[in-house]
Image (cartoon, rainbow, N blue to C red):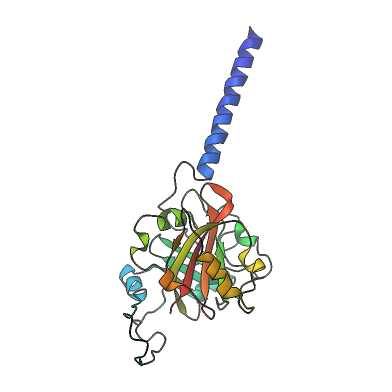
Length: 279
């Protein structure tokens, strides 16, 4: 009798554990729901978290595109930044880099709400997979670029920022759910990158699921023809979660930012967000 009871108890425990593992797998891979809101931003004793004025940021990203004109009609050249309002960066990079000299920038998006430092290790491109902005172990890691493939000043033809797709919504956890919403691209969408020397504005022109192939390892964007060939292939994509903005397609000589995170429903694949520097 006792043996029978023990067998029943063990069976129930194993069954419950199996259900728990299945639910955890479904939750971790996004089959149950997609996070649309991020938790409160992290706080650091080492530096002051920058505060952003939403109205100023809205003005900063209000890039006006002139109506199409007759190509035979001469137009006056415009100076870069001429039409942008005066803007003082809210990011104190002196303080940031005193706490960690590997902080190279700060990313800001209004929708989804993302406001986080960008890291670039001097020696180990895997370091910030599970380290926060001051180097402490943290499961969600940090947003980072790879020193083997990208410079510190976002001057490469293509810069890739990596971040975990956390089920809590932190890091890049809300990217796919938000950018896949109906009507999201009814207006132009921008990413702002603050650096110690300048503020860069990028217009999002494509989102798509992808395999895990390393973009910068397999594509030398400084080689002749590679840039245009790659983005021709991007604009040939179709399917669920693929969104393209043809009028914002980049061409050789442009600078592109890529946000890369795990794909909801399949952690072995990636969700990519492409944006072109416009100012």
